[in-house]
Length: 156
Image 1 (cartoon, one colour):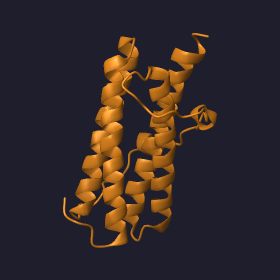
Image 2: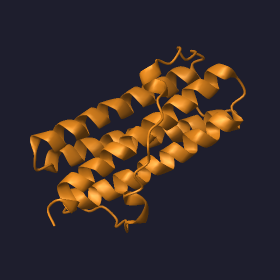
Image 3: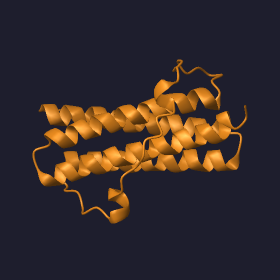
């Protein structure tokens, strides 16, 4: 990737790196998932992060965003489960609970980033892209928190 020449490009490059990091997090978490359901969910989320990266890279090339479907526009309820949990640095022996806490916090941060970008974007297509990505990240956060509820809270 070339060096960014304006603040928006710099932010998009940062967002792309966040998507790369999220893809790696979910791919690695899938390797230690205890159940096929959790593994499949994590791999699906990794694939979606790759799709976000591709959309952002297309934006840098000047490609416009297509019209959103109703499903992509639906509002997502934030469960806020990971908002209040303590995040610990990941290590080679981190368990799925620690990974899910970090994932939930990262998804929240990405949601906030894309929401802020949508508010300051200069054109309608860019606003739509950032609103879509914000909604996707909140959807991911919800999925992470539902998995956390299922795998951590239910075990106690």
